[in-house]
Amino acid sequence: MNKAPRRRALVVLLAAVFTLIGCSDDLFTDVPPISEDDTISDIVAEWNRVFLDAARQAEANTAGVSRAGALLHVAQFDAVNGINAVMDAQQHYESYHVSNFDVPSSASREAAAIESAFVVLSELFPDQEFDGEREEAIDTLPGGANQTAVQQGLKWGAAVAREIIDRRASDGHDEELNYTPPCDENGERPPSCWTRDLQGRPWSSPQFASMTPWTMTGPDQFRAPGPPALDSQEYADAVKEVKELGAFVAEERRVEVDQKRHDTALFWQGGGGTSRPPGKWYLIAQTVTESLGTTLTEDTRLFALLSMALADATVACWDSKFAYGFWRPVNAIHYADGDGNDQTVADPDWQPRAEGGSPEYSSGLTTYAGAAETILVDFVGTDDFTFELTSDDTGETRRYHRFSEATEQNVLSRIYLGNHFRFSLEDGLGAGRALGQHITTTFLQPVD
Image (cartoon, rainbow, N blue to C red; front, top):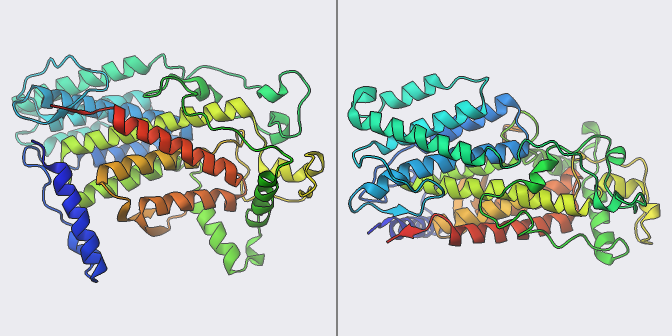
């Protein structure tokens, strides 16, 4: 029987108790192994770092990062889980795709994890080299590359990676799609309709709105319910809020509260050359596994669940954006005199801290946050978990005491950035949480 869930819950409970009585958080930096039939490993975290560095170097967009992460971590999970399945008395789980466990029980799980990651990243980032990372990782294994178990694991890991890559090759991620909002199809565009000429640039990766999901029955399974009517009080309140809190303020004119909002907006922005919004949740997951001293099996399962949640969060959110084609705050405020709401006032000079390059409703950032938060809370067993996150947008490090605390800051950050309304952020968060719950209860379940 796998004792990991009970041991992990005990560790988290003790950490909370000692925090309440004033003991240092450092007391739990070196948590003992939480499973007696598996080994502690940082292989998944190390290859996740390699992946995020590669994404930054390639300046991958948000949708691309979410898909790439799922390819990497699902391949690692199916590779390690396949070996666990043929080992006597070893806990294993339902596979995602590869269920033909044609691998010797003596094969090295570590080697399989290394090689599956290497094959996926080499496929995704052909202009980058990963041989050095592969050789260094293999050299740390008992017996090195010449050991039979290592060779078996490498062969199996490569085969699993190829199967996952081939399965997703025709998922629609690379289709060329010219997006026309449904509100603009008949040529009689309502004022709230997002269009290229209004926004000033095309939408990046609209094809992800119809990409084959990883876990959902269809892209619209968790479609957000839709923005409020333009003449509603909810809409007027949201416009007023973002107009007040999300306006760009020149540095020389910022007071302390302006600077704090500015810093929070940029901390979570996920701009070009970073690991994008999904990458921040991968970094948080790394702190979880490193703090709890999890095993290779547990690491691969957590990152596979998280990666599928982030990938399908893209599909679900892009589906909502595609379906509603709602305008951004900058357009709503510039053209408020045409929205039919007496409580909104046009300001053609208003500018946000950042505009956003896709239809506004719903928010990708909070859809990611809701899905990731749900996966992590389920894994740890509680929302109460202290961690630090360093933003690759700003270099600032912030400390959080709950996963939901980070999620709540996600909501505020986009209001402060000036490119989302509160209703879009909250509806995205709800859709993400529903998606996360769907994944944790349906996929990669234990096999008795």
